[in-house]
Amino acid sequence: QMVNADLQEKTAVAEASPIAAEEESWCTIALNAVPADQREQFAAVPQDVLCVVRGFANEKDREKATTEAMAMIAAWRVKVGYYKFFEEMHPVARDFHTWWPEKIYGLDGWGHMLQGVRVEEIDSDKLSKVEELDIDKIQGQKM
Image: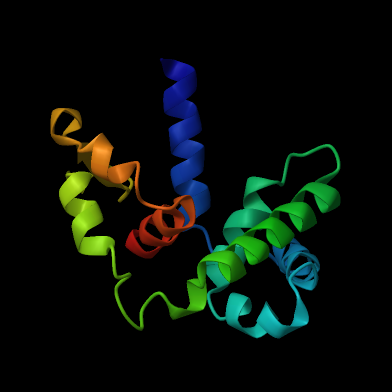
């Protein structure tokens, strides 16, 4: 239990900490792994880049792990149309949220959302007919 509390405390401090000078060069390395046509949009939210940089800080091959993660995230963003998420709701979103009932119950001590799903109310028959890519897009848009 104590190890978990220590990890949670370190995570909370890291999330709230401003970017360190050493991390700035890692953010540049990370952004260079993003295709040029997406780099400016990705860099527009520095916290997204910093989360990846910090998330792979202790990897044995930090550069490889960081750049692979950034490339994977960039590819996912293209696949789901990430940069258009705020333009309009996905056409299946309302139905999806009816078939997958969930609620945000508040925030934990570090400001993370506490989400609950009412499993007994999930309509798996209808959900099984939704394309996987559409589910990715809806879940991505929701987050």
